[in-house]
Length: 223
Image (tube, rainbow, N blue to C red):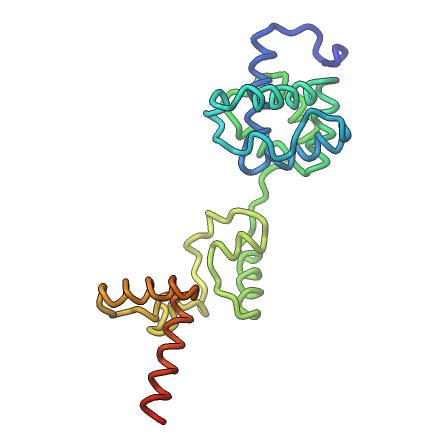
């Protein structure tokens, strides 16, 4: 740690920060990205492996194998080095900012909170109603369904506040025959099971098998 910033620290503060960094490095959303950035910064001789200790859940860090834990702690200690300069540089390189960093636990230690607020402060962006409607129009004009999932994929942001926002051109109920499962709607469960099993045996998707069967039946009946 760079002593010119924070001076000597109690050991429990060090371990609180260490576990926070470990949570970040094993998180589902940012863990792999952070490990890749560390490996790139350290070079090929680094003890950090991008795909090691893949997400197990923050509360299960202690269930990792000894080798995985050793590499995890090694990565966290590398971020700790020259604190907080190296940590800030890595977070900036992958566009990781305060609203995400501070979400990995409660009551972050001052040793983490201070540099994050000073150098990585970026409030979570809230889309306006006009921006959300513009995104909906964009999807609609390109023939894509206007759903919350599509909006999140388009904007790269979570729009929970707008999950109930209506759209005049959106169909709430999908007409019969247009659902992805329409091919077996209203079919006896025993017949449905046999169709799926036969399609699997022949290496086809259910839709492909049903379509082929219908074409054969039509050709036979219509000559």
